Amino acid sequence: MSVDDSGASQPSSSPAPRDELRKVTDARTMRALAHPVRIALLEELVLGGALTATELGERIGESPTTCSFHLRQLAKYGFVEEAGGGKGRARPWRLTSIGISFGNTHDDPATELAASVLSRLVHERQLDRYRAWLESRATYPREWRDAANDSEYLYYVTPAELKELSQEMTDLLMSKYQDRLLDPALRPAGSAPVELLTFSFPIRLPAAEDGPGSGSQSGSGGESGSGGEPGSSGAQ
Image (cartoon, rainbow, N blue to C red):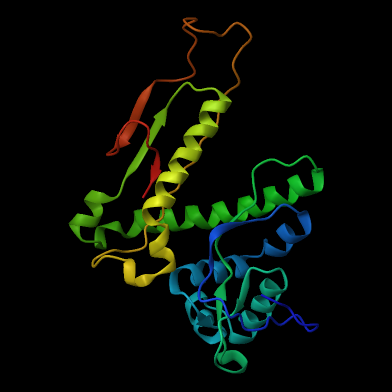
C-alpha cells in the first residue's frame, strides 16, 4: 500500500489483506487510531470486506464525508487501502491486515498512555456489544442461545504460565478459524460472526509468604457461570 502526498492511498494489487496481525508500537500511530469513528470503520471492514465510504456510513451512522475523511487518515497510517474500482466516495476500501495488536505494556510513558487510551476505547466498544447481546439474546434462535458461553474461572498460575496459556488460546483460534475471515467462501452454511472476549489478570499480587501449600487464597476456585470446559474463559 502506498500513500500519495495528499494522504490518499493508491489501489493495491494484492488480492486480500495480509493474514498476520499488524503490530503497532509507537504512540503517534496509537493516538491516530484512538478515535471512535476510526475504530468503528475498522470493525465494519472486518465484517463486511471491501466497502465504500457511503456503505460504511450507513452501517455506523455517519455521513459519507466523515467516513471518507477518517478512511484517508487510516490509510495514511497504513491500516486501510483502496480495494480498486469506483470513484470518489464510491471507491471501496479494505483492511491491509487481518487485525491489529498494540500490546499491553511499553517502556516509554507516552506510548504506555496512548496504548491505555486506545485499549479503553476498544474494550468499551466490545463490552457495549456484549451488553447488546445480553439485552437481545431472547430474540436469537435456541441453538445460538445454547451455544453462546458466559463463564468465569479462577486459577493459580505464574506470569510465564499465563502468557503461555494466552498464546495457546490465540494459536488455537487462529489455526482453526482465521482463513474464514479472509475468504467468505470458507464459511460454512449457518455460520455467523462470533466475538470471543478473554480478560486474564491477577486479582492481587502474591504475598511474600505465599508458596506451595501455604493455603493462602484470594477467592473460590473453579468456575462460575454456565457452559465451557476448564481452561476456557470469556463470552462468545
